[in-house]
Length: 283
Length: 294
Image (cartoon, rainbow over all chains, first blue to last red; front, side, top):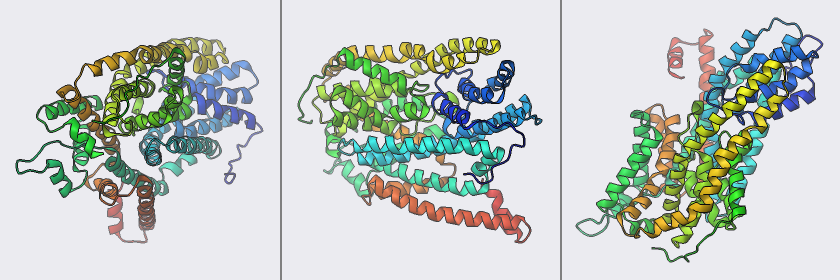
C-alpha cells in the first residue's frame, strides 16, 4: 500500500528494521504481561522501544519519549496494531520537531482504543473466528485433522498479514487510516461480515447443538417426534433463544446462565424430560 | 448405552508436563502471544488436536475438543473480564474428558460423549477463571519492577517484564495446576463417574446439562450481533439451512457469503445515495432514512 504515503517533512525517518521489530514486538507481546490494572501498556512500551531508540540518539531522550506510552492502554490487539502504527508516525513527527506533545499522542491513543476495541471484538473475535471455527468443525466431522489444520493455517495467515497491514497503514496514513475502519464505506462491509457470521452461527446451532427429550406421549409416540414434525431441531433453537433472552434482556451473566441450565437439566432429568437413553438415538 | 471398549487411559509425567507447557502458551494472557497462543492454541478444536497428539489419540482428541468448542465459539473478553478460562477448558478439560469418555466406554463421536465432554470442559473453564485472575495479579509484581526500570531509563529491561518474567506467573498459575490436575485428576474423575449409575438422575443431569451448555456459547455471540428483532432473521435463515435443508457448514458459509454480497451492494448503494442527498442534490426523505442507520 505505497500510495498516499505522507512525507513526514523532516530528515528523520524510522528505519525499516526498527518498524519490523516494533511490529514483531506488538504481534507477540501485546498481552504477554497483562494485568487488570495496566492491561496492554507493557506490550505497547516494548513495541515503541525500537522506535524511540531509532529516532533519538540520546539515551535520556529515548527514555523521555518512551515514558509517553506508560499511560493505560487496552484494545482489541489484532486491529489495535493500527493504533501502534499511528503513534509511530506521531513519534516520528515529534522527532522532526513538529508540534506533537505527550498529550496529543495520548489523546489520540485513548480516543482510538475504545472504538477499535468495539470493532475488533465484534468483527474478529465475534465474527471471523466463529466463522472459521464453524467451517473447521464441519471439516473435522468424524475427528479428522483437516479442521484444526484449516483453522490454524487460515487464522494465522489472516491475523499476521492483517495485523501487519493495519500497523503499516496506521504508520503511513496516521489518523486517516482509522477513517477507513469507521467511515461509511466500512460500515457496509461490516454489516455484510456480521451477516455472514450470523447466518453461519445459525447453522452451527442447528448442526452442533443436540438437545432431545425422552418424554413419551400418553397416546403413544414421543414428544420428540411431535417436535420434529413442527420444526427439526426445535429444542436447540428454543434453548438458544432462552439463553440469549437471559443474557441480553435480563442481563444475567454467562456463569449464572450456565447454573440455570444446570437446574433445568436436573429438574428435567427428575421428571423424565431428559433421559440418557434418548440422547443416544438423537445422534 | 454405547458398546465401546472400556479403556483406562493413563497420563504419564512427561505428558502432563507437555500439557502444562501448552497451558502456559494458550491462556489469556498467555506466553504464546494473542494470535498464536490464545486465538489458536486456546481454541478447544485446536487444543483437541494438540492433546490428541500428546496423549496418542488424535481422532478422539479432536472429537472431544470439538464438543467443548461449541460452548466457547465466541469467547470475547471485553475489557478483560473473563467468565471462562481457555487454558483450563482446553488443557485440563479436554484430557480429563478424554479419560472419562474412554473409561465410560463411550464412542468419542457419540452424543453422550459430547455431552460428557462439554460438562467437564465447561466446569474446568468456569472454575479456571481463578487462574486468569491469579496470572494477572502476579504480573502486577513484574509491572511494578518495570515502572522502576523505566524511571531509571533501564529501558531494555522492559523486554524482561513483558516477555520473560510472566513465565513465572504461568509456572504458578498455568503449568502447576494443569500438571497436577491431569496427572492425578484422571483417577478422581473415573472414580466419581464409576460411583454414579448410568440411568440415575445425577448422570442424566450431567448428560442433559452437557447438551444444553453449547446454547450459552451461541447465545453470547447472538447477544453481540442482535440489536433489533429483525436481526434474528439471518440467524433463523442459517439455522433453517442446516436443520431443514441439510446444508453442512461449508455450504451454509457459501450461501451466507452470497447473501452478504447482495446486502453489501445494497448498503453501499444506499450510503452513496445518502451522501448525494446530504450534499443537497436529493430530497429530504433520504436524509430521514439516514438518521436511522447507525
